[in-house]
Image (cartoon, rainbow, N blue to C red; front, top):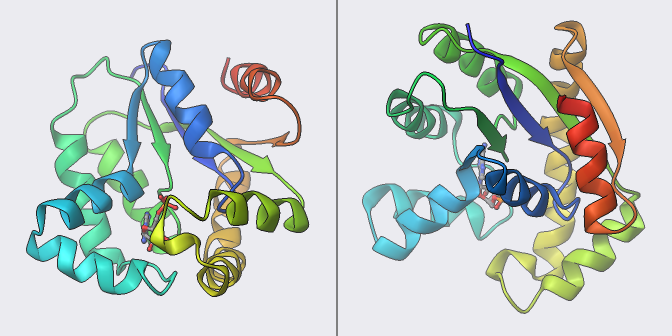
Length: 186
Ligand code: AMP
């Protein structure tokens, strides 16, 4: 078995996408379900049409289609690729499905890193980002933060039980946070 994959977790606006993209520079393979959905939306595929209906409300795309999309991507990995999952898993069923699907390829989640950022700071950051993404409108931001608390917080417990959890502070410069991520996955 290889050194293991990484799950980068944190609420919307915590900077996990930025940190995942920095890891790509060190050779990590970035698997971001939000990016994959946006690509389907852009191409106008049936999956994109389905995903857009949920994304525009700040709600999650159903687990079965999300897991299936990830399964296809995992199947295409080379054995020594190391993956950073960004925005997945977001529910307990997704976390359980990921464990099984990685095991089928002799892979595992070695580290789940949670980036902690206070709620008010998240709202501030997402509001500033608001020009770029349709799901960064104020009411959708609130809904996305609530959905994270309800559905994604339990995933933290899943990785805690597995002994894979690390928490880092998400306040500070991008490079400082990158060093904390590197320390957590070393
Ligand atoms: P993100 O770019 O990770 O913030 O994702 C944007 C949107 O895509 C989310 O608000 C969800 O609607 C959808 N999405 C991304 N990843 C998932 C996932 N793992 N499960 C369900 N929906 C997801």
